[in-house]
Length: 473
Image 1 (spheres, rainbow, N blue to C red):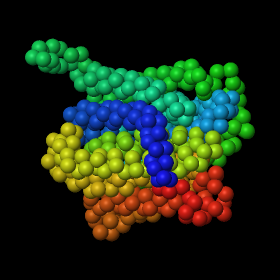
Image 2 (tube, one colour; image 1 turned 30 degrees about the vertical axis):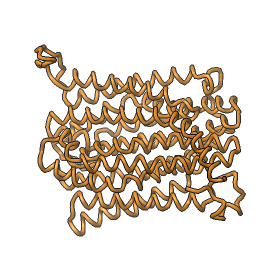
Image 3 (tube, rainbow, N blue to C red; image 1 turned 135 degrees about the vertical axis):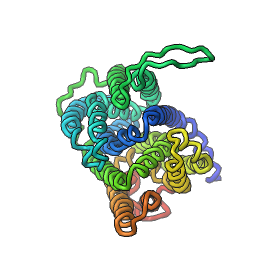
Image 4 (cartoon, rainbow, N blue to C red; image 1 turned 90 degrees about the horizontal axis):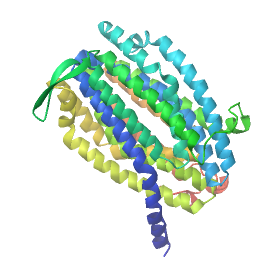
């Protein structure tokens, strides 16, 4: 009877989970599609252009993920406030997110633009490609304030259960990016549409045109998400002061700081990881760039479910609904594993065809397909850690994920890759094997922590150590 009741509750949660998850999935899908198109369009300019653009991708992750970490503190605070029916506190937290955008956006604008000439050298980019890579990086980060607004305000809206608005704005950003790519990357040329030949205007700016297209679309996204936030019924900061409110900021920062350190440390690890791969030569760099681009599409179910898990966990904790939290844990983990099995199977089956979209080089296709098929096997494993980390974000528990991610990144991926490439002189395949080892370790640590750890504030500390009373995964 108990099991039947639990199944009924899980079925009732399904529409709520998917209502929150599918817009995030579609947004991620569109972003990945545009990344695919960007890579393919730049790839037509040659391997050098692909390497110049891809060589600083991990630095983009470093900056972007650090900014996203600030949003996690606001996500936990707003979702829990709304779960407790405290709308005024949710709006006060939202007002403080505006302050966070202004401070962090301004800081990272100065930092990234100021260091743009040095980043390619630090990433061990070939000397002949460094000026092009530096120009691409500089243009990409000039609209940093708008990019910061898109990230943090989008997180605030998702915390309020509004995943559709960030999705719609993301679609607009991507559409602008693709259209501008078409006109800014290539020179004036003749194209054929349904058998009709016509002349298409083009600026012929190459890699620089791709950067300009992205920068302009970022500005649109930042303005649009800001307008949407101020018009939102539940979390609009309109009429609230954006001066520092430490009764709001302190708890947000206690949550955000470990997540920020985690994302900074792991993203810095991605930078080091990429620099070691760049040192293996142009073939490894190109294959790694293409494989990363292809692989990113297959994490979409994971990150969609992560967004839903974070918001619903915060709501359940704010409402002190322990039963709902337990049901959510079981349901969302099962859904995640099922979807990642499907996505991993597709990645394994069609890896060569996907790599061919971005490169015609036989060696790039061979090497890229090999590493993609390796990582496809670990997709369900990594998916579990993604969704459980989302639940911990909603609960405001970010210290344990910080420890797990840093240990996995630097203790397995970086150290393992360094040993494989420097002592055994192995190539890209060994580096991706270390990456898979990192993902497996994360899954094990998150499962153990969510099963036995002290993360659920609705369970007294002594009881929380009892496996039978911990939330099942």
